[in-house]
Image 1 (cartoon, rainbow, N blue to C red):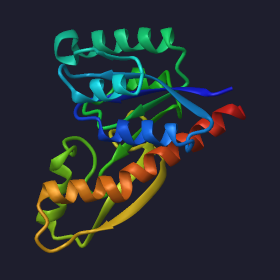
Image 2 (cartoon, rainbow, N blue to C red):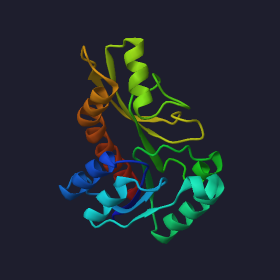
Image 3 (cartoon, rainbow, N blue to C red):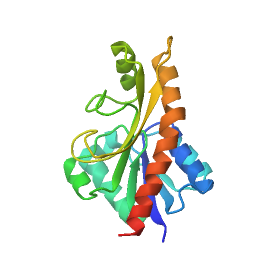
Length: 199
C-alpha cells in the first residue's frame, strides 16, 4: 500500500519538482504525492503540482492566521488521508501542538549542515548569506524530522557542498539545491514511506 504524501510549499517549488520527478522515475516506490499546499498566495509551486496532475491548493497563512491555517491544513490532510508531510521550502514554522499530532511524520529540508546556520530566522537566501559572511568552505543540506524546535528534529540525511570563490548567495543556493537538496529529499521521503509501510 503506497503511503500518501502531502508537500507544503511557499515559493517556486523546485524541491516539489524534484520530488515529483523522482516519483515519476520510480525512485519513490513506497510513496505517492497526493497533495501540495502553499502557505502563500501566488506561489509558482502550485502550478508545478498541477502540471504533474497533483491536486494543489493555497491556504494563506497571512489571511487565516496561524491557528486558522493549521485548522484548515489539518482538514485537508484528513480529507486526502495523508500519511507523511514534507516541508519543501515551506517558510512558516508550525506550532508545537500541530507538530505533536504528527510524531516522526513531518520531514523538512534545510539548506545548511545543521547545526550550522539553522533555527529561527535562518531560511532561504539568509542561510547562504550567513555561510558566505562567515567564510566557511563547506555548506550543504540537511533532511530532518520536525519537532517543536525549529530545525531541531532528528537528522536523517546530510550532504556537504563546497563553496567556491566568487559565490553569491544566489549561486550558492542553486548549487546546494542541485548537488544536495534535490538528491536528499526524494531519498528521505522514500525511506520514510518504506518505514511506514512496515509499521
